[in-house]
Image (tube, rainbow, N blue to C red; front, top):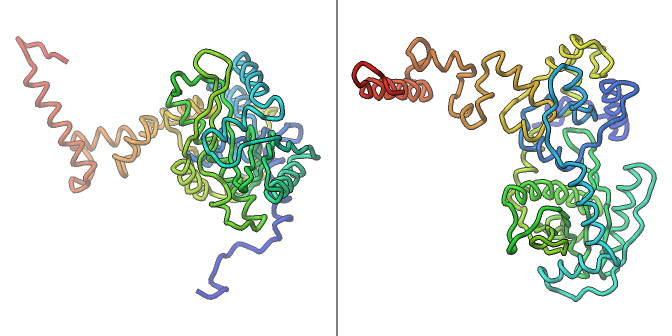
Length: 391
């Protein structure tokens, strides 16, 4: 393929393109709205549902989806930590990092070996704005790697491009070991009882940590590190939790290679933010002070990919569920079932295919539905006792 046959996207300088995207997203968000930061938890949820352009655009623009749901007349899906849990988590994190991170480094050395930790450097990562903090973090990583000692980066700032828009992420900590390895540290307030924690919570923490690892690999690549990013950044993260029912810290290494691979692939599938925004009508905005009908029209103009899993990850889930049910979409029944049904996208079409009223008999999904319907009818007929059907 010649250069003239390549991508038709105009070659805009990265800085100018980033500025243009930010201006466009600010217009969509509304002139007075404060942008909501796109954190690792939201990125992990977005990566789990890459087909949802609505969430990609709203998160990219920093729209408060909870407030948007209320403005649309729908309840905001309740998830996340209570204020009590947040306060408890902050107290536990402060204890883990106290005394220059001595206990944290001991836990990491206990699981990884190598040179015994002594006094660790804790560089100041303060800077103006997220861009400045990300640049300061990159410099601190370079200096710590060159120094060849233990370094604790407390709440560093990492930058990652998501769907063509920059996102800034803040892990609990990153530790640089004397051998130059960078390890992400996740500090959680749920307990490890008998050295094991709730698998669902560990899985969620691993998906979140995988986003941080991906961002760290980007930093290593920009620094031109040798060895390469994949060798510099550890693919096992240190998960620190309270031990049993105490407030004493314990830890476990969690391999996030699977989550990292999935997250990298899913984020690469996201449609670029500017492409989604360009498809909107002129003057479209998610500003919360707009009339509800106009706001609903703008929201509905952006395609969504609702699934029941959204209820645990997106504030707009109830609104999207109502719309999915209103059009009889099979997505409301779950991604697994939707994948099995092929081209049958509505519940009505599924029932018609099962009853032989529509559908191509050679379609495997249609054939399976008709077979299931025949088996059900046969079972019900056989269960008839004394004129009554046991259902």
